[in-house]
Length: 178
Image (cartoon, rainbow, N blue to C red; front, top):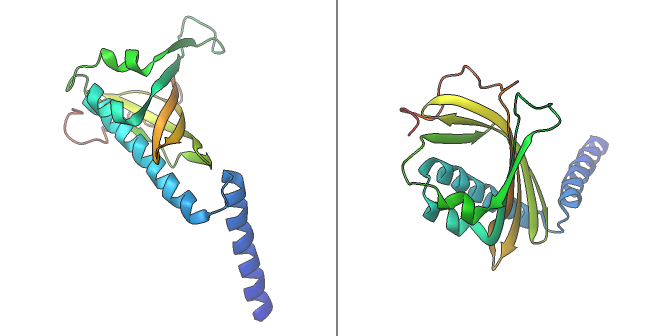
């Protein structure tokens, strides 16, 4: 019995150690807190997508933040998506609060990697407009911890319409998508 408990404790310790090593941190409680803070920033980013209010985006971003999207275009080969890169300042400048009826959500738990003051988040998402499914893809977000707060430095995403698990589903966000 003692050998089984020792083996179990060794296995649990190995798993916890490999997680801390994979994330590059020496202190597992800090990792848990940072992960929660990072995902809270991205929850606020999804809320800012919905609100279309630049003022909801600004506190989440580094001044130099950039966005980069890759949209699959049926007129181009699959390996040649349309790429659009711009500063987040340009990205949010055309937003009008309350317009758009946008809704974005994670599909499952995103992967979060943390090393000191930098982090990367990678996860599948789906996107709805005015209560209708629009597309899915992958969000890849780089963040930096500045003055104790996590900020978005770079936000990349794909825009895909084929193979989306949520296509045809009922709107998950409540009323009419606004």
